[in-house]
Length: 185
Image (cartoon, rainbow, N blue to C red; front, side):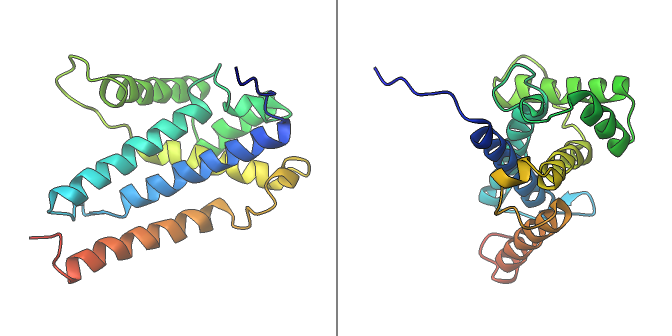
């Protein structure tokens, strides 16, 4: 039997930061495929990839914000959770009630369409801007914290720059596929 020691606080902060990066990257790759409310991809590969980016982003985001008893929920790495939560709502420009209603929509999407395929007939994809901004807020908070930042010494870009770099990468991948007409009709 392989018994492992629990993660150190340093390791947990690092993992939470990586989850923020995974969520932001996948939100950027998802969003970069869309122009004027239309997915630019015509080939099934790109349609599937784009959907997978969204689903992965939602799964990673839920580990950070929805799974309150989860090992990587933000409350496990934030020194002052009450202050952080208030600052998060303020940053998102939402009341606690509005945030909880949004969280419920994200969880319904995750539970009914990503984790399981239930009997729901219509899939309602939650607006990702709130989730993206929450992940960015947590990432930047950890980068600025003097103790937490020691665990993430290589997180050199602020969230806005990281997201922008990932968005540009996704944009050029979609554009390159279009220019080469390999994946588009």
